[in-house]
Length: 300
Image (cartoon, rainbow, N blue to C red; front, side, top):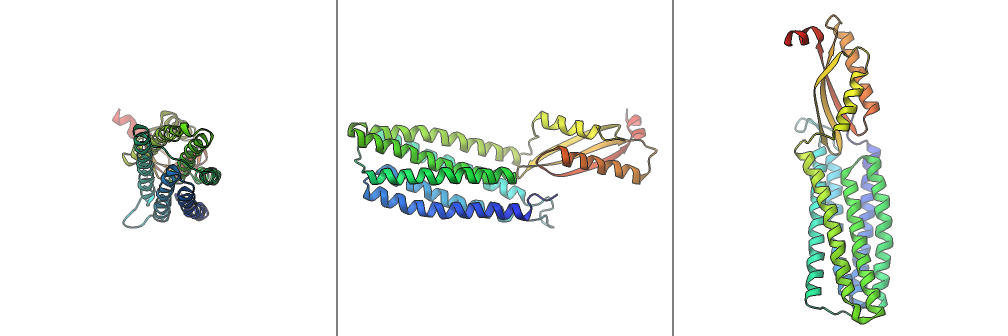
């Protein structure tokens, strides 16, 4: 089985290109509305959108390379390229959150005062609507593709929407009562903590893949139950499972009657592969080794 089919790969690239176009439009909108609307917070939010655009480029590169079939130099495929791209997106989220948090903290400390206009309010509102819609569209595509990279990029879209929410609250509060200008900074600081949490989670999942961390026990138990349920399998051992590009790659040994022919043992192995392909979600590839039961007893 391949990591991504061509249709899924095209869907991932298509939604990322849509995101890149939206981000480009929002960069222009936020900068113009921030400057003309006298909102420093909205200008900072425009910088956040610039980071989103750079992330879109990383995602497109990760999808293009990560979706390639195995070759002589990469015999297990290129899915780890996608894992690397996911880690970069996670780092970008953390860096963006730190920037927003530090900027908000300094504004609170220095009692920075801004006098935004309703134009800044409109700019923030448009950004929230577009980026939240883009988040839902992107995360659905990522889940359908089983792509952690697309899902990570969806959260980058949502982080932009949340930072715009902070701008919206701050601008609204300032328009209602100019003495409430500090609301903008406190809201931005709160959002930055949330974005850091999401970035750390994405980075943690990527590191788990890089270090070949085994999946949760419930997944291993499901694999074991599925394998042992196949007719002709007497036992199993040496199960190894790793995650690459968000999908499981595994190998296991099954024990069969030592009097069976090679062809019969091969058929049982194929039956195990079919059972796992149907019963285990997010399975990329599986290798089944066949051992005769007589040799198992000798070892004991």
